[in-house]
Amino acid sequence: MTPTNQAAANPYAPPASAPAPGHRQCDACGADILARAEICPKCGVRQHSHVSKAVLLLVTFFFGGIGAHKFYLGKWWQGALYLVFFWTWIPALAALVEFVVYCFTSSERLNEKYSAHATAALVVVIAGFVGIFMIGILAAVAVPAYQDYTLRARTAGAIASVYPWRTAVAEYHAEHKRLPNSVAELPRDLVPQDPADRYATPSLGADGVITLTFQPAAGAMAGKTIVFRPQAEQDRLAWDCTGGTLAPKYRPGICRAPR
Ligand SMILES: [Zn+2]
Image (cartoon, rainbow, N blue to C red):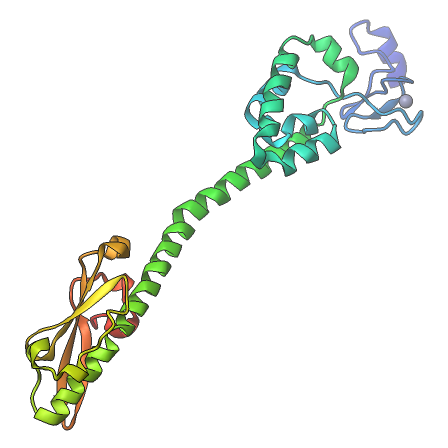
């Protein structure tokens, strides 16, 4: 007996026309085609892919703002518009309205109108997650890094405002062979006139030490200090700026204490 005869003899065997595993029947002509074929190679009719109302509602509710439900229904252009303008929140509003409409549309009606494109919807949803993840990374890493960067820029400007004071101390030292202990000891023409920096104020103390104190405008650095300590090396002064209370991450490399 051939296998065909055997099947005909057995009433519980599937009919001879039943599709093989991984195959199914064409929606239009009934030909045996690959289950995942989108278009029947025999009659050329596009195969209908079942729209799940539950999936559609979930996708619309959670990812409608980026047009994922439009991609699920194969409405590519509308989906693209939602995706491009997601940041205006208008697509999210439209998706909310559509969510309510879909709620009141029967599964049969949905399947008459649409064919499911689950892969496209999944790609958009994953892209949405990747986007949220990237924004999260930006918020967690890039924003604080940028804030530190702007604070370091303020430090650089504040340190520059100390240079006229260093010059004054150096000139005083060259003339008197000792270090000044206050502004009052400096000749008037040596005293820097301009406070120069809005983020920090330098002040001259004992032994020519200049303390740079950060002002409230300096944000996270407010109240912190960088101390510039002069050391006489023969006829000139070397400055050490590793002192003070300002955190190392806001200092230029030269003003960080060696580890
Ligand atoms: Zn067909």
